[in-house]
Length: 174
Image (cartoon, rainbow, N blue to C red):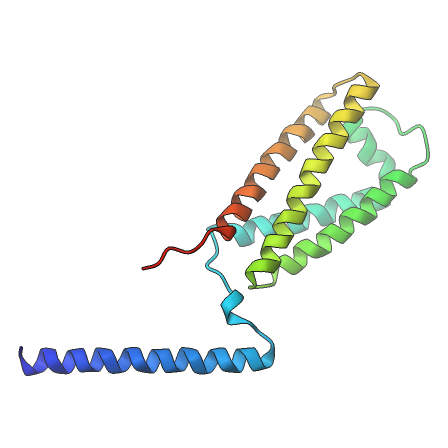
C-alpha cells in the first residue's frame, strides 16, 4: 500500500467522521428549534408539483362554489339549480378548508403531514366520486361534463394514492 493511498483513506475517513459530527450537530440544533429532521423524507418526483396543482385546483373550485354556486352546478349537471344555493356554498366552504390543508402540505418537509394531506385528498376524491355517481343515478341522466368529472376523480384518486403509497414505503438501505 502506497503512502498516497493510505493518506487518501485517512482523509476519507476523517471527512466521513466530520460529516457525521456535522449532521449530528445540525440535527440537535434542529430538534431544539422544533424541526424534526428524522421526519424529513426523500420525495418522489413530481410530488410538490402535484401538491401545488391540488392546492390551486381546490382553491379555485372552492371560490367558484362560494361566489358562483349556480354556475358550478350547471357546468357539472347541465341543469339549473332549482333549490337554494346554500348546499353548493357549503361545499365550497368545505373545499376551501381542504385547500388550506393542501397549501400546508405543500410547505412542509415532514413525511407524516404530507401523507395525511394526500390521504385527505384521496378521501375527498373517493367521496366525491360516490356522491356524484349516486346523484347521477337518482336523477337518471349522464351529462358529458359529469362523466368527465367522474373520470377525472378516478384519475386524481389513483395519482394521489400512488404518491401516498410511495411515501409510506420504507427506504432501501444502501
